[in-house]
Image (tube, rainbow, N blue to C red; front, side, top):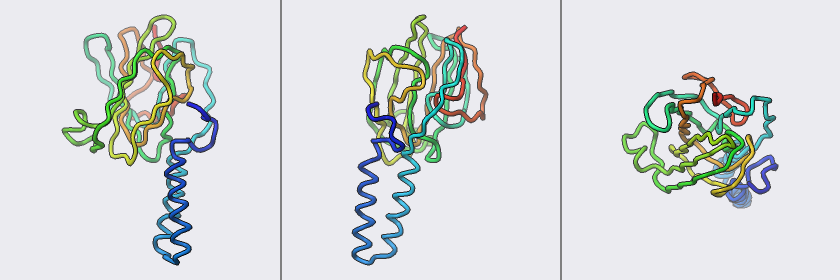
Length: 209
């Protein structure tokens, strides 16, 4: 992501600008209630789009870190290429910046625009906006991420492209209020449990064995 060292993510600049503009307009018109609402909107947007620096922990070379802030909803096992499926729920109180889980080549991006229904809706997994990404490290270990929006006021924003070499912990996008599913292969050792609170680029999901 370009200009990723600013304290506020650039994806939020437009929303913050319009909120500030509304504040001055309502102030000029002496509409106190709307002025107060627009002021609260500015504060809320600054919080939602905050872009804190994260110190990359000294984990092993084969480590996989959380790509998002949130709480682990479930951990399931299945057959096929990916044995483990870890679901992480991110809300409006969580930092919205997406971060690369491991130093890797981005093999695939599949972005599908769509609805923004609650995760409790039976249609959410079918029609909600989502993006699938596949990362492969130098040892040819692969993981797949699926970011799916919940009830969000904005789309998923990505600042990367396929076939790009990415460093662990670097920023690659923004998702406000969503579910992230991490698909992991059989040769992976998990380091999280259901209910664990995780932070992007700081919390260890596990290691490739």
